[in-house]
Image 1 (cartoon, rainbow, N blue to C red):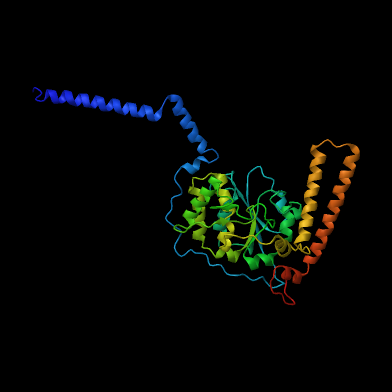
Image 2 (image 1 turned 90 degrees about the horizontal axis):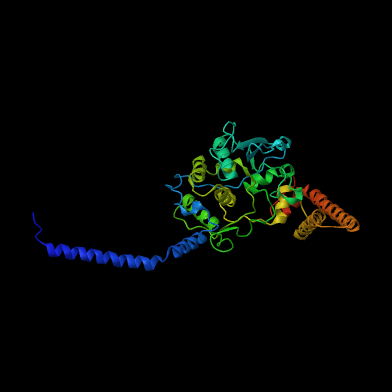
Length: 386
């Protein structure tokens, strides 16, 4: 059949070609040369520098926490003076970690392997740093918990630990007050505020410019508390080491702990970021507080029985400690002649002796339960323990 509208078809073809040419010109001006396109792509990548790949992907999907699982926090009470406590020591470990030191601790070990599929205790996956092991322990042992669960890292000596104990985890556990844990429910094992207080993890403010952590907080918050605005900040001393009474763990349902772990399992945040967000969330989980920055002087006294006269004496101890560190660095890293080395060594030895005297006096003072009570501003009656 012959075309009934030859002139119309020719006109249509002309219009299509004309419009195509216009579009090509527009794209050419918008995109520019290949060199310009490469520059734009490089600039876009610069925007994301320092932000993990995971943050560009969709956030965690969820349907909300289990109904009826809101925590019910109740103040605890210590046992009678003649009664003992059972303790559990919980930690994440790798196959290469030396954890023989736990044998010297009066606590049942719960060592969760993160990289050995044949281990008796193991995490579902290696993600979220220590948080995955901590939550797995609670879920596995919810109905068989010891009186006090102590959550720590696998290294005996670490800068995470209190310098007053020379960074020794064994000494921290040995001096930890069971009664304090029972009263408070949750006790951060680090007394020094830095790092962590104030505003380490802030929606706005001190941490507001650190995009990865900020987005990590929002992702977790939206999952655990859907519909609620995030707090100004989550803050407590670092470094995810703490002790919790079984009653305080039971204040939250097992189903809710599973829900918390599900966030770790499914979040597209990487191992580091997901673990870091939890590091500053434990006080929220176990105390319902966004901020838990107790006075350092009170913490050392009532948690560990190291009762300095006042905060100034604690500061003096810390100043001596840091001066020793500075001298040791000079001796190790800088050229020092024989005479100066001898003088620096003597000064460091004098500082160490003064520190030890201050600590011994503070420990002696901490053996008196009424002093611990006075420092922590709580009532104490004759016959009360620590």
